[in-house]
Each structure stands twice: as C-alpha cells, then as structure tokens.
Image (cartoon, rainbow, N blue to C red):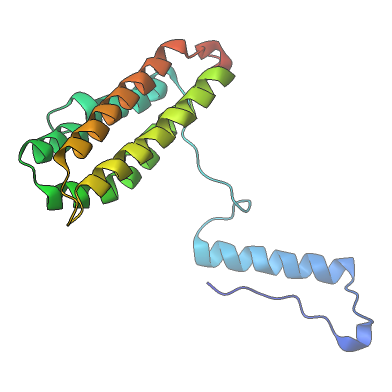
Length: 176
C-alpha cells in the first residue's frame, strides 16, 4: 500500500486550508478504499456479535484442548509419557500462541466480573509460565522429566481453573 502525504508548500506559510486538507483526506480515503477493498476506522476490527452460543463456543474451544483426544494438552501428555524432550520443547514453543493467545484470551475477554477478569488474566499468564517451565526441562543438557511433569500438572490445573470462570458469566451484561 502507498501512503499519501500531505504536501505543504513553503510559500503558504506552512498552513493548509481546510478545503485542501479535506480534499487530501478524501483522496486518501478513496485510494485506501480502492487498494484495500473497504474503508474502516484506524484500528477497528470486525467483531462477531456476542451471543450465548459464541461465549459457550469460546470456552468449549479451551475445554477441547484439555479434554479432547485431539487436543494439545493430551498430545503434550503423550510426548511426556514417551519422554520425547525434543517434541516437548518444540510443542511448548508454539503452543502459547496457538492455545493461550488464540483461545484462552478470546474466552477471557468474555468474562463479566472484574474479579473473574483478573483471575482469568492471572491463569492465562500462568499457562505461559507452565509452558516455559516444561520447555526449560526439555532442553538439551537439562532433560528433567520431573520438572516437565511438575509444570504439566500446573498447566492442567490452570486450564481447569480457567474453565470454571464460565460459570460466573453474567449473560445479562450482553443483553442475552
């Protein structure tokens, strides 16, 4: 994308008339519309509407990572059981982005009480530290399966406690 700069003529005493500024802004908006396909305010995101189902789905996505045979946490458990340190190290390196940031943060933002929001943030951040602890225990030269198991247990506990936040959601906040 190209960004159009407003040009200030030196002879104009470094001022721009409102008309020129509006014309330039209109041209910039038009060029962004043509290049980008749609005009939207800076930083605006398209948000899906919040419904009872979308809240339940957000927490189910977290629950699936814990309980589903295809979830990341059971997969991590299988790596631990095999003492696959290289696999543990690689998986934990990427799982924070895939799980915590993509799923837990989305669910956490739907929690309604201030106390539960703070608890959700704490638990979400704890998951990061659990993954870091497992990663450290799986590094070459370390290979500490007991350390990995300790942090895995904390991961399961933190995710389980996070899922309990769903029970405290006040759906009336969302007019549901």
